[in-house]
Image 1 (cartoon, rainbow, N blue to C red):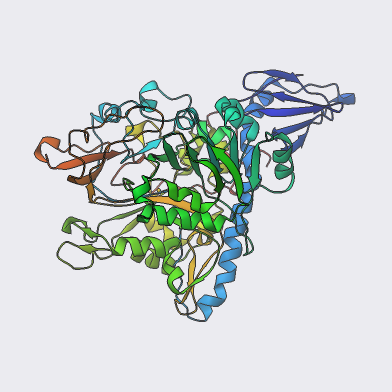
Image 2: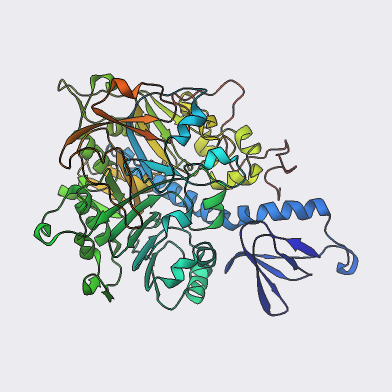
Length: 593
């Protein structure tokens, strides 16, 4: 029987031999053959169910099989994430009973605070082009990732993994949860030429054993310690060292095909030069946050020779060799453990709160609305929602008064959004939240629609995570931690890493790139000038000429602001419910039900 594979590579094991089947290739599968939905993992045995095993699969079933390969390849890990969140929720029940306050966190990949409001506009398509081509790296922005199958205009300013990993990379540190090395090397063949690669991952079991078998000899694998049960390594980042400096990337996609091609994802990236010897002891907040986080990863130190500096030890301290003075964001990390004393404000939601408390905002942001957008919902309650809103609302207005707590909304796909998406119901496997978490009565007032017309991604289901105050992690308590023991201890189970965008007065600096010459409208400013930034969405219709002293930074927030609350017919997606209305591919959910 002929089988034409979908875009994610798979492996067919037949009669003791393994054959990798890439996009658009064909392979024959027979009774008792085994499919590896991701090479080395997620095994499915093919059984022919006709008389004497001679009947063949119908063409419609065959087409469905092609679409479901990627869905099955990630569902096991999505289930595990839910189990981890639920286990944490159960473990916190005693704390609630004792009356201790719990401020829970979220898996923050992008945090935006605050933004100017946006709405529908006929200029949307033009504005997305205004970001400019990729070679003009706008270091104060983040990018959406390329989505296959969409109109060309939607991907004008988006990035692919080849746009990120390019040039003469001397050392690569790749941090992620799920890693498909075979896909990664196919998509980025230049990685084969990188002399030193460290992969920090969250794999285990058969997936880990397969990683060890297929990795190039010069690659090092490391899974960070998880001292508290049900924790994960979920941080998605890259550190790419070049002869000219370092590229730091924080993003939202697993290192697998489906995440980099079929989902709405986000990425922040900035390049930094090697530090001048006279400033070797000068550190900035971004540097300290990065080194503190890398120290917690505890990878085994190794020694390499770099043309720029000679023999060096590659550990967390090595990354102090770069000048992060021009950093445009703050890093917000989470590491597992019971954090007390000064460390309580070092990680998770307490880190976010402490950074915001140092900031002064214009009065128009007093009680500004809060937006939570994520792809996995843990077990929450009203108390947690209130307490987290306090953390995200931290900071003072320019008259010295507290900003006050704004009204939150949760941007979450509906059942109809998933059904009509470019993946059909299969997209729901990456929005892994059960009905017992989603269908709580108190959440009804928070639901808002996933509307992404202005970036052409209404049908590309979100895996990006963003949190915004306006005029980038999943909501999982394991990620951002919970205050315990009368607020004297912060407990975190998992590793996370995100970036915080803030409207602030920045010191202008020369734009820098490790791989190409940059151009920016900041270039006409003298280095050292003070510039005020204003964060807006692509739908902003203000007049830049009326604000000549302000640098307008357009952020491709991939949903409508203000969000549209759910209507009476809207139903939030739950992945463990049965849906009998067929999706765009003629399938129901669950397809094995």
